[in-house]
Length: 221
Image (tube, rainbow, N blue to C red):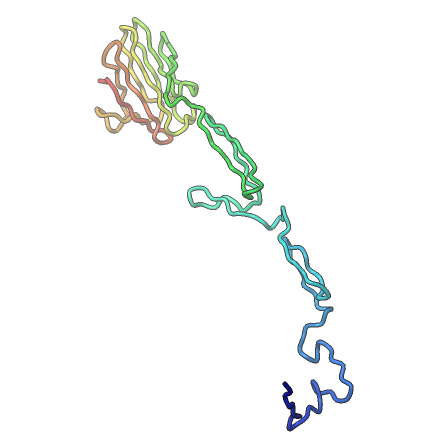
């Protein structure tokens, strides 16, 4: 089947403003010249001119690939590496999962879930020391003895330190705050006076709640 194709009523006389044997350049049709470059910034690769297809990729281990590290909502730093350190009673293990593009970190407690208390037995008046943290100071004497709680300037116990004070012998045991120390308890809320452990085989505990402030609870008078 033949179709009659007629000539346009107004034949084309120019192309892109050119006449005769026309040769077009990219700029004639608003095309980007092949000399135009795709420039990659820091952390990217794959740039070049437009003479070929270009694929951009993210460079591995770039110093600009960082994450914000926060603790309890407070920014601690912006780094490209996070290092896990096993604290007391903890182990840290890590497994690289290249297929999943991730690293699995496992934190495991090495504790048994229970707390044991070591006894520090004394037979004369005694001033507590840093190593008494978490221990029981057992006063075993037939004579009266005094246990002194030193100021923070002498022994800097961490906040939250707990020490048990036990009366093992028949001799009375008096708990005395050192210079500047407050030993708050149910009998003396100001915490400025000494207290005694009520009876043999009785005990009391002290807990540090501020720099020179302790709370005393137990069988005291």
